[in-house]
Length: 142
Image (cartoon, rainbow, N blue to C red; front, side, top):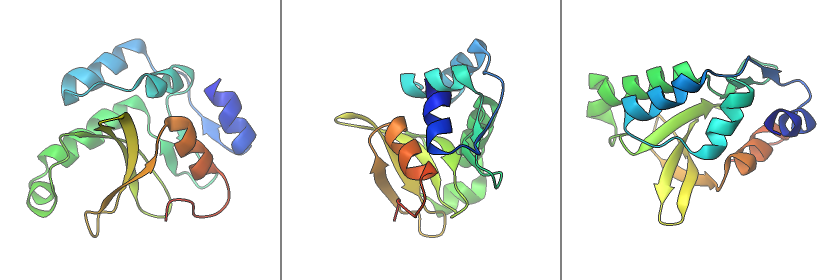
C-alpha cells in the first residue's frame, strides 16, 4: 500500500528492503515512545524512502533510533533546544527541517522542527498527509 502510494506521488522515489520486525520494538524500547502503526506499516514495506536527491523522506528504522538518541543526549542540543523526549523524528528534507511525530490530544500528528529557531509546528495529521505534501511539487510545509 505505502510503496504504491509513494510511487504514484513520486515515481523517482527510492526504496529499501523491509525493516526487520525486531527494529520496531527496539525503537519503542530505546526511546520510550510508541511507534505509530502507520509508520510501522510503511517500514514493513520499505526500510526508508529517499527522493532523487538522496534526502531521506522517511528514515530507516536504525537511523530513527540513532538520530533520536543523539538529539536527546548530545550536550549541545540539550543546552540549545527544548527537550525532544516527546518527539519521534523520522525524516527530513532538502529544505533543512526535520519531521517528527508528536502526540496531541487528538492522537499523533507530525511536526516540522527548525534547528535554527527551535520552532516546532504541526504540519500534517497523518503519514499519508505528510507524504503527499512532501512528495508533490512546491514547498507545502511553509
